[in-house]
Length: 200
Image (tube, rainbow, N blue to C red):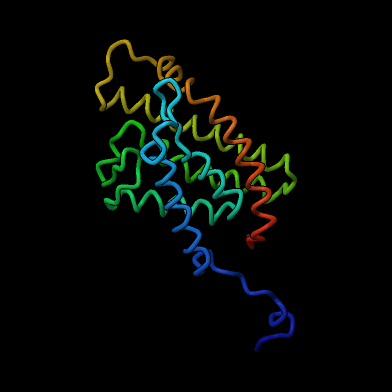
């Protein structure tokens, strides 16, 4: 028999609601554009290093959609690419992408969105959003760079001079722009969450 108390309890919303699927598809499209932004805007190259916006959009997914829905959006993006759609960098895709030394960065986007979302779920102030964005960027670098190092050492036939230090030195050129983009993602995410009022 259903009690009055049970009737008054709010029904939990499924993470797979139609709106969630729409947002997941939207962020998957944004990630594809972010991965290949230099194909659309060729001048976005700094010292030969392409400026990509994948980390920016992965962080935004967590900040705007929350931890679970943000991580789901990034998971959808990853599986769309693995299924063969050309949504990864250089318009690549397919299951073979798993053996790419840079695939760790794609995997990291799921955790980036989840952690960034978790932080702002507990702290919705502007500084909380900026901290969440910066933490997400650090997670992206830690997972992606370590994956890249071990991939080169174990199966990608790295040259003898390739060391753990060299792997991190490779990541130094894009670091300043990623810090700036992370701060901008925090500011933009805070504003957009207030505008969209996404239910977490």
